[in-house]
Length: 125
Image 1 (spheres, helix red, strand yellow):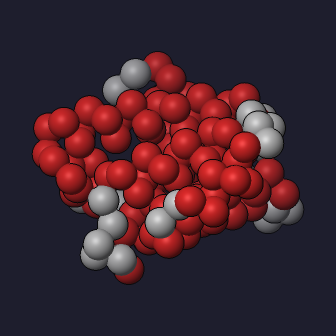
Image 2 (image 1 turned 90 degrees about the horizontal axis):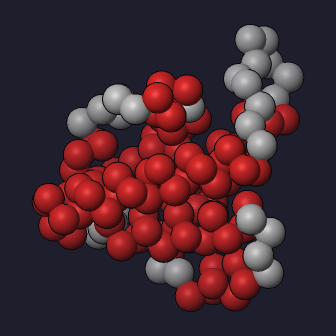
């Protein structure tokens, strides 16, 4: 595992758990849905105004993935539960999303339409 993954493992796991939860409910989900959701979230956290326009073009599955990931990231940064998860900046979130995006691209090449989803599903319980 990379140094980056070690440092942000909790955030990466939260993001991937949200993605897998949608994929398990929607058997039609593909790596493309994940790519679309991640692209929207990266643009959103960078403050790009095109994000709202892009969201309208997403598949329902990708839209739900983006919604759940955004919800877990917002919860991380607003919860008062103890022990509270560490807060992360928008820049850190973008870096985590890009890290996962690279994983999607790698596993998609290795395993086809659902290569990434099949790979991470085995690690999320």
